[in-house]
Image 1: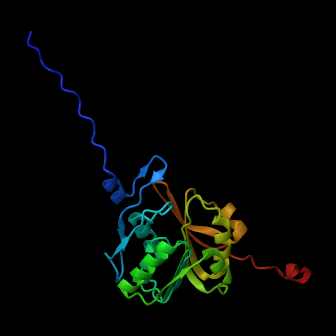
Image 2: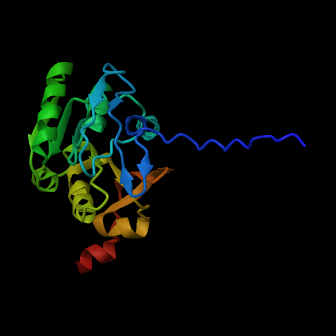
Length: 228
């Protein structure tokens, strides 16, 4: 009988760290952020935004941003916006790219603040203002009803979700929107305590993203007004 040597099955090649970084894949419990993201619409379309390799930094994926701005109608001309956990700033720069009048980016990490300011200068995005500090405190100081759009994308391990939602509910106009990105969905029952409700919802991988609006105020009856 002729001997046929056995060839060991080839093991699938492991993806390099560089390739994983470009894709923003999750390895175990650790997310390797992409090396850069691009603005997907508006006057700054295709502009590159570098992504620092920092714990908890998760740029909103292209697919999610595309869905979000389709929900919003793409044209944000004249809107006043704030991103209080700015990170890479991609959400705020997407809004500026689509005509927003004022975009405030708030970030605590000094490295990210410097990168945001550098990008603002590079794009000549005069409608964008970058501040270092606590975004929730900033929202609490905002005039009630002064913003048309607020982005909330805290680190997933953050304990600031409820406080940020409550502050955002006070700061947005009617009509106005709060974008929330979280590791789990938020229900209308949970949001009712802060005066918000779900307008649109989507999920992409581990990302649960919500477009929220203020809860309509129930008009008081004459009897209720008299007893107040």
